[in-house]
Image (cartoon, rainbow, N blue to C red; front, side, top):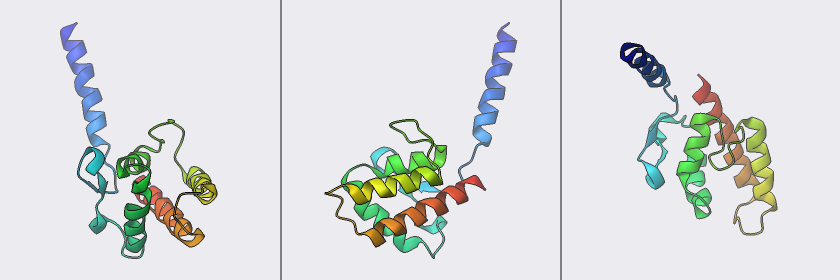
Length: 120
């Protein structure tokens, strides 16, 4: 019985260790962020924008976890391109985001790019 349990645990660990996110991150916890070197140069300015603007209300850890897992960390809802668009609209409607429509558009494009890269 112990061998069966050990074998099952090893198989589960092997399966999870094979899951490798394509988008590289740096740091842990509240200091977690996307590694700029692993992001396409065409969207790097948007990554800087994301790092400056979005952390005013929540940590980058939330965004990284959402991209890596495909689930919003607080609600557990799917975090896909449709959800990214909905979050963009939500940010447009919030009075204190300090973000223009163009900035939100750039961040939505970046998040969609990161979702695509993570799926590879």
